[in-house]
Length: 259
Image (cartoon, rainbow, N blue to C red):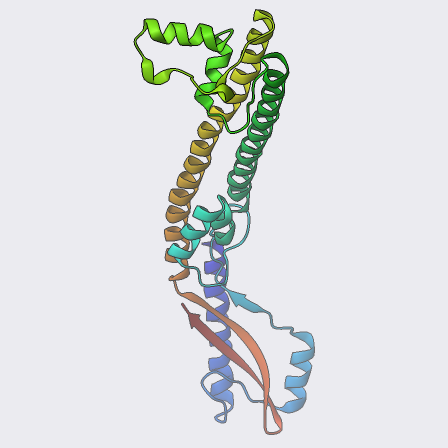
Protein backbone atom coordinates (compact mmCIF):
# COMPACT_ATOMS: atom_id res chain seq x y z
CA UNK A 1 0.00 0.00 0.00
CA UNK A 2 2.86 2.42 0.82
CA UNK A 3 4.49 1.74 -2.55
CA UNK A 4 1.19 2.30 -4.33
CA UNK A 5 0.71 5.67 -2.56
CA UNK A 6 4.25 6.69 -3.48
CA UNK A 7 3.61 5.84 -7.11
CA UNK A 8 0.36 7.81 -7.17
CA UNK A 9 2.03 10.82 -5.50
CA UNK A 10 4.85 10.74 -8.03
CA UNK A 11 2.35 10.50 -10.85
CA UNK A 12 0.44 13.55 -9.53
CA UNK A 13 3.61 15.67 -9.27
CA UNK A 14 4.71 14.71 -12.75
CA UNK A 15 1.30 15.55 -14.21
CA UNK A 16 1.36 18.97 -12.49
CA UNK A 17 4.83 19.56 -13.87
CA UNK A 18 3.67 18.54 -17.33
CA UNK A 19 0.64 20.88 -17.08
CA UNK A 20 2.76 23.90 -16.10
CA UNK A 21 5.16 23.25 -18.95
CA UNK A 22 2.24 22.90 -21.37
CA UNK A 23 0.91 26.32 -20.40
CA UNK A 24 4.32 27.90 -21.01
CA UNK A 25 4.93 26.23 -24.34
CA UNK A 26 1.97 25.49 -26.62
CA UNK A 27 4.18 23.11 -28.63
CA UNK A 28 4.13 20.60 -25.79
CA UNK A 29 2.10 17.42 -26.04
CA UNK A 30 -0.10 15.84 -23.39
CA UNK A 31 2.60 13.50 -22.06
CA UNK A 32 5.73 15.40 -23.10
CA UNK A 33 7.60 18.62 -22.27
CA UNK A 34 9.39 20.66 -24.90
CA UNK A 35 11.47 23.60 -23.86
CA UNK A 36 14.68 25.38 -24.57
CA UNK A 37 17.25 22.65 -25.41
CA UNK A 38 19.93 24.16 -23.15
CA UNK A 39 17.64 24.33 -20.11
CA UNK A 40 16.31 20.85 -20.71
CA UNK A 41 19.83 19.49 -21.09
CA UNK A 42 20.79 21.00 -17.72
CA UNK A 43 17.65 19.56 -16.13
CA UNK A 44 18.35 16.17 -17.61
CA UNK A 45 21.89 16.15 -16.21
CA UNK A 46 20.62 16.88 -12.70
CA UNK A 47 17.55 14.63 -12.89
CA UNK A 48 17.94 10.88 -13.39
CA UNK A 49 14.43 9.43 -13.89
CA UNK A 50 13.80 5.97 -12.52
CA UNK A 51 11.07 3.49 -13.42
CA UNK A 52 8.19 2.73 -11.13
CA UNK A 53 6.01 -0.35 -11.02
CA UNK A 54 3.42 -1.84 -8.71
CA UNK A 55 4.91 -4.73 -6.73
CA UNK A 56 3.11 -8.10 -6.74
CA UNK A 57 3.29 -10.82 -4.09
CA UNK A 58 5.33 -13.99 -4.57
CA UNK A 59 3.54 -17.09 -5.77
CA UNK A 60 5.76 -19.24 -3.61
CA UNK A 61 7.19 -18.90 -0.11
CA UNK A 62 10.81 -18.88 -1.33
CA UNK A 63 11.13 -17.79 -4.95
CA UNK A 64 9.50 -14.88 -6.68
CA UNK A 65 6.40 -15.34 -8.75
CA UNK A 66 7.27 -17.16 -12.00
CA UNK A 67 7.04 -15.13 -15.19
CA UNK A 68 6.28 -18.19 -17.32
CA UNK A 69 2.71 -19.24 -17.97
CA UNK A 70 1.97 -22.36 -15.97
CA UNK A 71 -0.88 -24.86 -16.29
CA UNK A 72 -2.56 -26.72 -13.48
CA UNK A 73 -2.61 -30.03 -15.36
CA UNK A 74 1.07 -29.73 -16.24
CA UNK A 75 2.03 -29.06 -12.63
CA UNK A 76 -0.09 -31.93 -11.27
CA UNK A 77 1.22 -34.38 -13.88
CA UNK A 78 4.78 -33.55 -12.82
CA UNK A 79 3.95 -34.39 -9.21
CA UNK A 80 2.55 -37.77 -10.25
CA UNK A 81 5.82 -38.61 -11.98
CA UNK A 82 8.17 -37.25 -9.31
CA UNK A 83 6.77 -35.89 -6.02
CA UNK A 84 7.90 -32.29 -5.57
CA UNK A 85 8.48 -31.63 -9.27
CA UNK A 86 5.12 -29.87 -9.56
CA UNK A 87 5.83 -27.68 -6.52
CA UNK A 88 9.25 -26.75 -7.93
CA UNK A 89 7.61 -25.90 -11.28
CA UNK A 90 5.35 -23.46 -9.41
CA UNK A 91 8.20 -21.91 -7.41
CA UNK A 92 7.65 -23.68 -4.06
CA UNK A 93 11.18 -25.07 -3.88
CA UNK A 94 11.30 -25.73 -0.13
CA UNK A 95 8.11 -27.83 -0.25
CA UNK A 96 9.43 -29.56 -3.35
CA UNK A 97 12.57 -30.66 -1.52
CA UNK A 98 10.53 -32.31 1.24
CA UNK A 99 8.45 -34.34 -1.22
CA UNK A 100 11.45 -35.25 -3.39
CA UNK A 101 13.75 -36.44 -0.60
CA UNK A 102 10.90 -38.35 1.01
CA UNK A 103 10.48 -40.20 -2.28
CA UNK A 104 14.23 -40.83 -2.48
CA UNK A 105 14.18 -42.29 1.05
CA UNK A 106 11.21 -44.53 0.22
CA UNK A 107 12.77 -45.93 -2.96
CA UNK A 108 16.10 -46.38 -1.19
CA UNK A 109 14.22 -48.48 1.37
CA UNK A 110 12.58 -50.54 -1.39
CA UNK A 111 15.90 -51.23 -3.10
CA UNK A 112 17.60 -52.02 0.20
CA UNK A 113 14.88 -54.48 1.26
CA UNK A 114 14.91 -56.27 -2.09
CA UNK A 115 18.70 -56.58 -2.05
CA UNK A 116 18.57 -57.95 1.51
CA UNK A 117 15.74 -60.36 0.65
CA UNK A 118 17.57 -61.76 -2.38
CA UNK A 119 20.80 -62.11 -0.41
CA UNK A 120 19.02 -64.07 2.32
CA UNK A 121 17.26 -66.22 -0.29
CA UNK A 122 20.57 -67.18 -1.88
CA UNK A 123 21.82 -67.94 1.62
CA UNK A 124 18.97 -70.26 2.67
CA UNK A 125 18.96 -72.05 -0.70
CA UNK A 126 22.66 -72.82 -0.40
CA UNK A 127 22.21 -73.84 3.24
CA UNK A 128 19.40 -76.31 2.43
CA UNK A 129 21.30 -77.79 -0.49
CA UNK A 130 24.19 -78.55 1.87
CA UNK A 131 22.38 -79.70 5.03
CA UNK A 132 19.06 -81.12 3.73
CA UNK A 133 20.49 -83.02 0.74
CA UNK A 134 17.87 -81.64 -1.66
CA UNK A 135 17.64 -79.69 -4.91
CA UNK A 136 16.27 -76.16 -4.45
CA UNK A 137 16.29 -75.08 -8.09
CA UNK A 138 12.88 -74.22 -9.55
CA UNK A 139 11.03 -74.93 -6.32
CA UNK A 140 8.08 -72.91 -4.99
CA UNK A 141 7.78 -70.89 -1.80
CA UNK A 142 5.52 -73.64 -0.42
CA UNK A 143 8.34 -76.15 -0.80
CA UNK A 144 10.79 -73.76 0.88
CA UNK A 145 8.37 -73.44 3.82
CA UNK A 146 7.69 -77.18 4.05
CA UNK A 147 11.33 -78.23 4.36
CA UNK A 148 11.71 -75.64 7.10
CA UNK A 149 8.85 -77.19 9.09
CA UNK A 150 9.63 -80.90 8.70
CA UNK A 151 12.86 -82.83 9.16
CA UNK A 152 12.30 -85.04 6.09
CA UNK A 153 9.94 -85.82 3.23
CA UNK A 154 8.79 -88.94 5.08
CA UNK A 155 7.81 -86.93 8.16
CA UNK A 156 5.98 -84.41 5.99
CA UNK A 157 4.03 -87.01 3.99
CA UNK A 158 2.96 -88.83 7.15
CA UNK A 159 1.53 -85.57 8.52
CA UNK A 160 -0.42 -84.96 5.32
CA UNK A 161 -1.78 -88.51 5.28
CA UNK A 162 -3.11 -88.02 8.80
CA UNK A 163 -4.81 -84.84 7.56
CA UNK A 164 -6.12 -86.74 4.47
CA UNK A 165 -4.56 -84.02 2.33
CA UNK A 166 -3.43 -86.34 -0.46
CA UNK A 167 -2.90 -83.61 -3.04
CA UNK A 168 -0.16 -82.08 -0.90
CA UNK A 169 2.03 -85.24 -0.87
CA UNK A 170 5.54 -85.14 -2.33
CA UNK A 171 6.10 -88.19 -4.54
CA UNK A 172 8.83 -87.06 -6.94
CA UNK A 173 12.39 -87.98 -6.06
CA UNK A 174 13.51 -84.41 -6.78
CA UNK A 175 11.28 -83.23 -3.92
CA UNK A 176 12.83 -85.41 -1.24
CA UNK A 177 14.85 -83.95 1.63
CA UNK A 178 16.32 -85.05 4.93
CA UNK A 179 17.99 -82.66 7.38
CA UNK A 180 21.22 -83.72 9.02
CA UNK A 181 20.14 -82.05 12.30
CA UNK A 182 17.00 -80.36 13.60
CA UNK A 183 19.11 -77.37 14.59
CA UNK A 184 20.18 -76.79 10.98
CA UNK A 185 16.54 -77.00 9.87
CA UNK A 186 15.61 -74.31 12.40
CA UNK A 187 18.52 -72.14 11.30
CA UNK A 188 17.44 -72.53 7.68
CA UNK A 189 13.88 -71.55 8.55
CA UNK A 190 15.05 -68.42 10.39
CA UNK A 191 17.03 -67.31 7.31
CA UNK A 192 14.04 -68.02 5.05
CA UNK A 193 11.66 -66.04 7.28
CA UNK A 194 14.06 -63.07 7.32
CA UNK A 195 14.17 -63.12 3.52
CA UNK A 196 10.41 -63.28 3.10
CA UNK A 197 9.78 -60.69 5.82
CA UNK A 198 12.02 -58.17 4.05
CA UNK A 199 10.27 -58.86 0.75
CA UNK A 200 6.81 -58.37 2.29
CA UNK A 201 7.85 -54.99 3.71
CA UNK A 202 8.50 -53.79 0.16
CA UNK A 203 4.73 -53.61 -0.41
CA UNK A 204 4.41 -51.23 2.55
CA UNK A 205 7.08 -48.96 1.04
CA UNK A 206 5.41 -49.07 -2.39
CA UNK A 207 2.18 -47.93 -0.72
CA UNK A 208 4.10 -45.10 0.96
CA UNK A 209 5.52 -44.04 -2.42
CA UNK A 210 2.00 -43.97 -3.90
CA UNK A 211 0.70 -41.94 -0.93
CA UNK A 212 3.57 -39.46 -1.25
CA UNK A 213 2.64 -38.93 -4.90
CA UNK A 214 -1.04 -38.49 -4.06
CA UNK A 215 -0.31 -35.86 -1.41
CA UNK A 216 2.05 -34.00 -3.75
CA UNK A 217 -0.57 -34.24 -6.53
CA UNK A 218 -3.29 -32.65 -4.38
CA UNK A 219 -0.91 -30.04 -2.93
CA UNK A 220 0.28 -29.04 -6.41
CA UNK A 221 -3.29 -28.67 -7.66
CA UNK A 222 -4.13 -26.24 -4.86
CA UNK A 223 -0.95 -24.22 -5.30
CA UNK A 224 -1.39 -24.11 -9.08
CA UNK A 225 -4.85 -22.56 -8.72
CA UNK A 226 -3.43 -19.83 -6.47
CA UNK A 227 -0.54 -19.06 -8.83
CA UNK A 228 -2.77 -18.97 -11.92
CA UNK A 229 -5.17 -16.61 -10.13
CA UNK A 230 -2.29 -14.25 -9.34
CA UNK A 231 -0.99 -14.39 -12.91
CA UNK A 232 -4.37 -13.23 -14.19
CA UNK A 233 -4.25 -10.06 -12.09
CA UNK A 234 -3.31 -6.94 -14.16
CA UNK A 235 0.26 -5.69 -13.92
CA UNK A 236 0.08 -1.87 -13.88
CA UNK A 237 2.97 0.56 -13.87
CA UNK A 238 4.59 3.62 -15.43
CA UNK A 239 8.02 5.14 -15.81
CA UNK A 240 9.61 8.39 -16.92
CA UNK A 241 11.36 8.19 -20.27
CA UNK A 242 13.59 10.92 -21.73
CA UNK A 243 13.42 11.43 -25.50
CA UNK A 244 14.07 13.79 -28.38
CA UNK A 245 11.74 15.47 -30.85
CA UNK A 246 13.47 17.46 -33.52
CA UNK A 247 15.97 19.79 -31.85
CA UNK A 248 14.17 19.65 -28.51
CA UNK A 249 14.49 17.26 -25.59
CA UNK A 250 11.35 15.73 -24.09
CA UNK A 251 10.37 13.84 -20.96
CA UNK A 252 7.53 11.35 -21.36
CA UNK A 253 5.36 9.39 -18.96
CA UNK A 254 5.00 5.83 -20.24
CA UNK A 255 2.13 3.81 -18.82
CA UNK A 256 2.01 0.01 -19.01
CA UNK A 257 -0.73 -2.48 -18.30
CA UNK A 258 -0.62 -6.19 -18.88
CA UNK A 259 -2.15 -9.47 -17.76
